[in-house]
Image 1 (cartoon, rainbow, N blue to C red):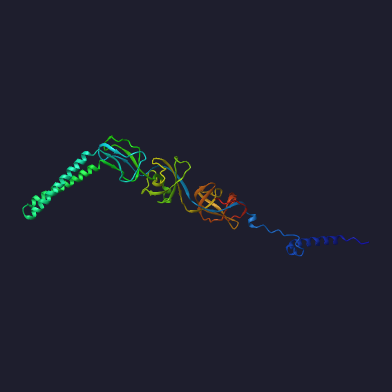
Image 2: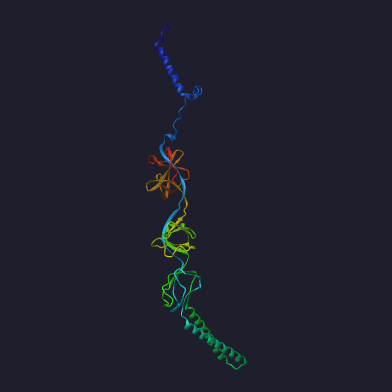
Length: 366
């Protein structure tokens, strides 16, 4: 029968077992291959795992394009109110609502019997003056006519020629012609009516294009140049978009309204649009490229804006300037590049250089 171990021997064996166990724990990484890799060693916590938990989003890039809508009234490319240069009775009239004319075509004629007689009389006087001049020129060549008398004859001829031109002008004023290619409006007179020179006969428009003028804010003026394409909408054609372009920009800014006047031309080859119609002009004003971040990433502290950028698992404060808000996102100007990460949640506990632990990543701002 074996004798029981002594108390001291049991104590020494227990201490030895404990020491061997502690040594095994200290060297478990080196002993793991010997033990067949049955147990994996947990790595020590990294800086990111011990930092402030945050949610981040990548920085995007977007153009600062602005869509501006203004309202204006269309007018014809050229437009006049027809009036006669002289008074008289209308003997012939071609004017009518929406009647088309080429430049120089007759619109109406006034009674011209008196003017034709005056032209015939002036032409007769001119013919007589020319015969007298021819006769005196021959006499002067033979030495039988004085130079003074010849000068009088030449003057009479010139006066007769001027009377002919004046009579022709008076006859021409009895005819009203189209000043350019265009369309006449509804006339206010009829054939046989007597008109004076101050009577408005009808409107006359060149509708090949319509012009719309409006005021543009000073802040947007740098984005606009001649030739910029625009879209035009009018209640006369709901849902239809007409294309146009900026044709003129005023040379000065109104100091009272801080706006500048712009003129837009809308082609009207199909003659669908009418002068006087209202238009909504939509301008897409181009801008520069800027970083875009979620609105939650922008912080306001001590009168300035900033965002927290994550650099090597640490928070870096980046001062920014707000350019424009867009549907939950903000275009900013600052030291940010596309793809860099900014903090959108967990900013309250951040400080420059403080470690962060990214717990989630949201989608880009735009």
